[in-house]
Length: 89
Image 1 (tube, rainbow, N blue to C red):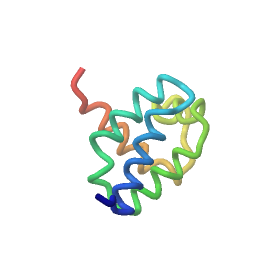
Image 2: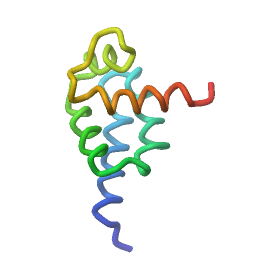
Image 3: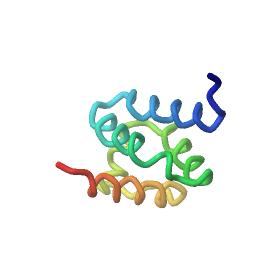
Image 4: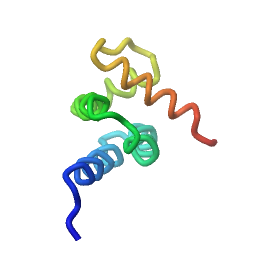
């Protein structure tokens, strides 16, 4: 059975989300990828893919709102933050 390009993209993004350099980012981005990626628009997936190219130390500070993120990443970071706060503890 052949997977579609869209399925391949989501699979690749999930893998990149779970295999970061920092365990904290694995635990934030991995569950987000598992639960929310399939519902994102193509534009949001592009934004998420761009965000994944950033280094983990910056990402962690941005997603936890310790440091202001570049404006181009703010919308997808808000989506991630909303997902994280909605996750069961």
